[in-house]
Length: 493
Image (cartoon, rainbow, N blue to C red; front, side, top):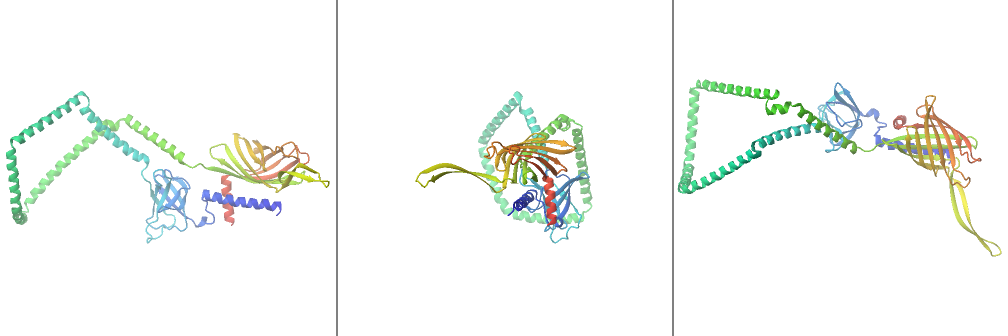
């Protein structure tokens, strides 16, 4: 297989693996974009729901939140669902979460399967569960009521006066129990006689109760006859009912007067409700708790990475060789550090040095031993594995493996003719046997567009047999560029 075929196969395999990796992480639909079901839902609030949040039916993920926007003071979500999902009339949506601290998602209730399907363009009206702030407000109101009760108790029984009152109450209870004890002892006979009377009464009631019930039935029949004959008296009863309703109306007026005093700030309850200091303290408490919840939520989120994919090729015109590089930079979000993994088609191959002890036997029976070092260069495909750090906004230092050997590098960015440019210096392979000097490479890059650049430089100036000028070009993609590239590739296939 030719070197060009090898590097082409490696580039193809790298693109395929990277494409699968990005499709899995970003959940990009390929080949079914036009078949997905798009539904719009309107909520008063969707706190905790962002783009790419899960959409579930009966706990099973069936899609993602495609877009979140504000429309007329309402939150309008665009849901992208699997083609197999069917929504019927009566369908609804709501915001739910996986446990107390789990991620929030949009729960879809598809409606009655026997009902007609929803017509295109229908906007569902969603509901959101009570927020933590709502629960905290209710708990704060309950705490205020409890505080008022404890304050009233403290004013009633607190201090020296309250202690004296409690002592007096206990003394009265002692006197009452002593009096009852004496009274019972003095009237023990009467109590026994009373118990005998109750016993006789229960026996008589057992016998007479059936006859009393029969007489009550006859009395009810008689009353029914009287009511039928004297319906006029019912008007007097209705008059009594009207009088009762008037009294109830008076009670309602009294309640209105009490609530008016509270609204004006009169009385203890009115001062509590209308005191601005109390309201400010409650607001400060709610704000502090809200900030704490946001801090916990931020710390629970998984750290994300940003990818920069690159491919470049250059010609070493003086020696008639070429170099090709394909790889990816993995940046840790929120830091200045990144990792670089690249495959390289090196112009002089990968060097292997082997050392062996050799013993030579002469024809006359003598022998000689010596150590032989063999340098073999083969397999022009090698790799770069480096770690980089951004010292300044446009200055990056790198260290690690350069074409299979240890080395360091520095990248300095600047602007040239209103276009970004970069100057790169690399030094590696410090102990090569061919030359007692490291392999140096100086290269300049000029970005014609945001992604495409031209390069020129000088390679290995310390090695006269291999030094050469370089000319080449390359392309780099960020996260968004990779998504667009894979989207176009998916559409083409």
